[in-house]
Length: 461
Image (cartoon, rainbow, N blue to C red):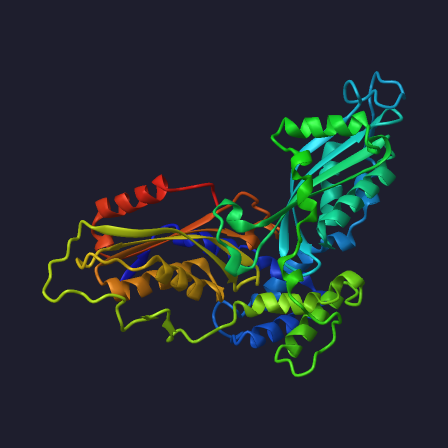
């Protein structure tokens, strides 16, 4: 009936390439695997089904990769990386040019939000003023930043810890750190095309010569960021924006079981995961975190596929009546583009998000399918444990069951599991295509639909 094109292979390979490394985790990761199994059971999933059998090991590895900073020391990174600047005396600010400032911009990082255990994206900028005629290897600024990013964090503490650690370890005249951070929103709030509605905040921290309202070093630091189109002065208002969207949800401020809750077992499982990572679940900032993470996961709980969806009963009832004996105008291609979605990767329990484009041949009735039905359909197949290839095919088959002539579905998505784990392919984006009916035999129709997607494309997802 249908066909997934060559792009089908891209995401599948991405989620399986680390399988050979799973056995290297050792016994410490085993303590986390029963907790992940409890989460899968709470989501109504069968851990023995294909796609989930190795999920407990994958999730354990992803969390350990994402929190490896707990097991790293700054002094081990910086030690031996301080170099004398030849031909420069020991005056403060004499290295690195007039003013003595060295700035590394656009360091791409990922961290885990301590309020909900979801990853967030960071663009980090670090500057320092050398002293004592010594400079530090530039890569060390990035590596030290990553040590603190690879812990359960909030953005302001991350900025403070990076700044403090660099000042203590390289003993410069001063350090400046600026962060631009993006937190994934709740699935129901994915309405914006730009970054799919991610919550953006900016934060900074400084020491030494960068401190003070009239510091020329801080002004120079901001000016050097502006050369890259980064205006921290404009972004400073965002520091007051609520950071974690799940913080707005009322949860008990304890990490023990609650009375009469069907998710008690899941909350206890997440608490044991925190312990396995070496964290203290009773730390003030982590109170309520297991409940928030469970709230997020429950948005992707398994459900029965044979349900009525906004007047759209899958597989047996058309949204519109097909005219009896009418002639189908196969030249009329209808499309609904840029339908946002957020799903949960069943391999790593990490989100993937993006947009869905749907094209189909008009039945000849002149009445197309309402966009709200398509959005409901995308939400229906997206809000569960999924893989992008399967979701693409399921959406195509559901639309084909009511349009009957031909359907083409393109899904473009960013996978957090590709950019927050060991592979860290920051700019990667995965596209999948499902083609059914007349689109299979009509190359010109496929070309027209894809051109329509291109013509209406906004900022990359």
